[in-house]
Length: 430
Image 1 (tube, helix red, strand yellow):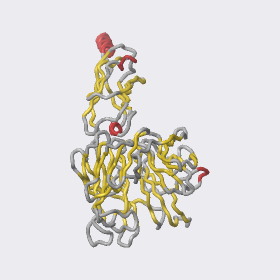
Image 2 (image 1 turned 60 degrees about the vertical axis):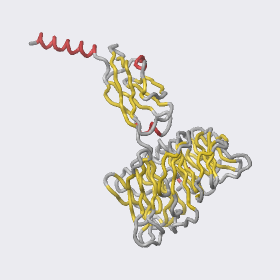
Image 3 (image 1 turned 180 degrees about the horizontal axis):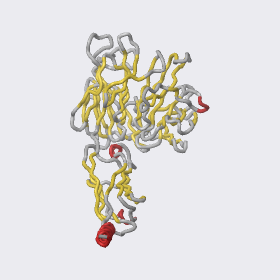
Image 4 (image 1 turned 90 degrees about the vertical axis):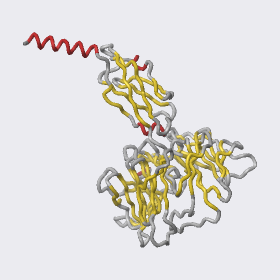
């Protein structure tokens, strides 16, 4: 019996030595691959890998990648965003064990998410009788849509991935926060019976934030103070976001930074402050560098505007560089935004143009005017809001909108019109 056990043990050991690495799990968020360049996915094997395991690694459909080995993980970094709604495979034909030298093939298949945008479809004027406002998610590629939340009066909302928070008003005009999730709708606490606005939510930071004016639970009076609430902490109450020196932060404008727990806010004195919403790092004063306009897609930078024009502020080192703002010679532009550190859009009431060129990216139909232009999180699409002639305002006491406004999704690279959607306050328009 002892001899038999020894023989079996020897056979198993030899088999293990001859067998190449097997894929145990994968790491990384595939949904991020459509949003920005530089996203890394990992294929983790059941044993340490030799450096030669990178040989022959490919992506189908083809995409430029950097590949490296780190312990038992083959790390694949995508150099550019992937296509929406597409099936991909990472194929590693030669995973080789560092100790055994044995090789095996492995692959990882995944599907990227579709291109989606959320809009607010109001049921009519604020003083109407009956009818509900809806927050609707549109699948731009398939044309499908789904209602995420509805209520009698929705002032504004914020959505990031599966996190949705709506600011609703009751019949008396009082505002309340509602969180919508897979387990239903729940109420979120407010600091007090005051006014709430500039609602934003971050799945990365697991928090919702907003600007509040009014009394606090302890009698403290707040004016345009930034509050945040941890969505993962049951029963949590909103707390003031504290800037340098632990002082509650006043905010005229603010944004969460995608892919992190950080936010950047501008106070009434024009000072910018960088804050880790988790509290893990101290707040950092960025100075008076211009009016905060937007977060630059796929980067750790924000767009600010000063006396000399728009500029890009790198939040990693504080450097400030002039932004390439397009405006055709001799024309007055109603607005502009950055698509990337080297490319921008400008528009007037009738036309959107790209990179200081005469080529129009979008032209409004006769009898319509351009009301708003926003950039998708990936930077590859823009949303152009248009308003029909003679449109009236819906009369909401805060965040009033034009009745009959529509939004058109346009691909930046080609100018192709991908979809036209009903509603206002698109999720891409922060």
